[in-house]
Length: 256
Image (cartoon, rainbow, N blue to C red):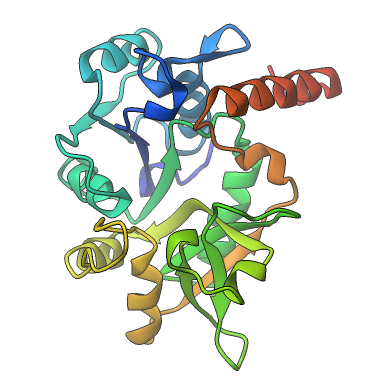
C-alpha cells in the first residue's frame, strides 16, 4: 500500500454504454478471467489509494454499483450524460476527499493495469513536482489513440486525438493511455476551463495538457514498459485479446 495513500485519490471512469460490445450488459461488467473487468481496476486502485476511490457511473449505474460494492467501499458519482472524459472527471470532483493532493485518473475498461505501473507514475509525478503527469506507451500501431506532442524544444505540449490529428501527427507512435496523475488544485481549475470545441463535441480530459502548457505549468509523461497492460476494451475482439493477455500474465506469475 502506498504510504501516502491519504494524499492520493483515484477516479475510475465507468459510465460508458459500450455500444460497440453489441451486448445489453454494461461494458465494465463483461468478464475476463471469470470476473467483471471493473473489479480488477478497483482492486488495483485500492493498492494505491486505499478507500479514496470515486467510481463514475452512468449506464446501468445501479448494477455496476451492486457488483463493485460486493468487494469494495468506494464513492460514486453519476455522469447522467456522456459528454466526454473531461466531463466525467468533473462529475467526480465533489466526491474526492478534501485532503487529497493528487488525483489518479483510471478507466473501468482497462483492467490489466498493474499497481506497480501506477506507483511509477505517482513517483515520477512527485519527484518532478509536476502539475500533471501522463502515462504514455509506444505502440507499433497507434491507430485510434491520442498522440503525445512535444514542442520544438522537446517539451510535452499537447495530446491530439485520432479524430483531430493531422496525417503527420498520426505517424507518431507514442500514445496517451488516458491514465494520469494530477495535482487536485490544478485539475479542478483546468476542468472549469476546457471547452467542447472539437470534432466530437465532447469535453476532452486531454485538453488539460494544453491548458497546463499555455499556463507555464509543469507537465510531463512517463513511458510504460508494457503496452499490453494499458489495452482498453471497446469490442468483443478487444475482450478476447485482453483475456489472452491475462492468461499470458498468469502463466508468468504476475497476475492473480
